[in-house]
Image 1 (cartoon, helix red, strand yellow):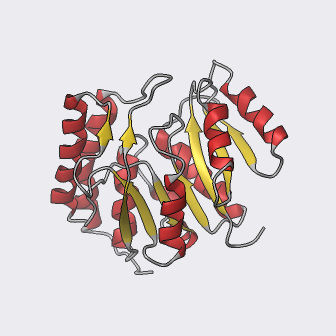
Image 2: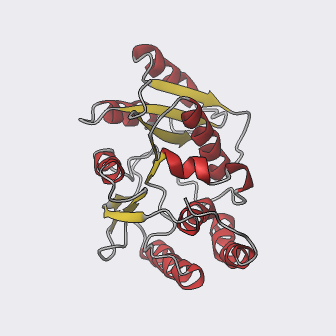
Length: 246
């Protein structure tokens, strides 16, 4: 496997309605991405659908099955480690439900491959509020959560909770993945904050985020609370930690 290959990690739980379509959409992109699905023992047959796609596209689609719902953050950590072991240079993350347009993966990967940034974030808020079909309350909660994170952490990222990201390999090799604390959506904040603290450049690429059409959202108040209250602890702990600049 060459060092310039790209992979996208897609966590799934009960995504049988989206699994085949999202994999097909990624494989059809003009830039080649392999797909790694992390399935948390979905009872709706998601894993079987992904395995069928893996047989259909050998060497392009992979699945790691876990015993239960262990959190979004741990799913991505598992995926990051696998991708590093396999030698991928560009490692992306996205949702399974088409809220992230697969075509935007090309822009994120290009931003990192060109040297524009070490981390490219598909940003809902860098050019205003680019969210479609979300209830206004959720839009406001997400938007002001990101503003709150910027205020506390002082990192130059408008969409700190974004889950549509491309990393250069070096970033994930530098961040001590086993020390990442958060399991829910605060994981996204922690990864961006830690990347900045290690001296990596984070760039934001404008995207339009569309609320899922099929399946059910995994967001809940507990996940949001982790993000709000965890940020203060994240910033506080960073004051006592030494970051070796990459």
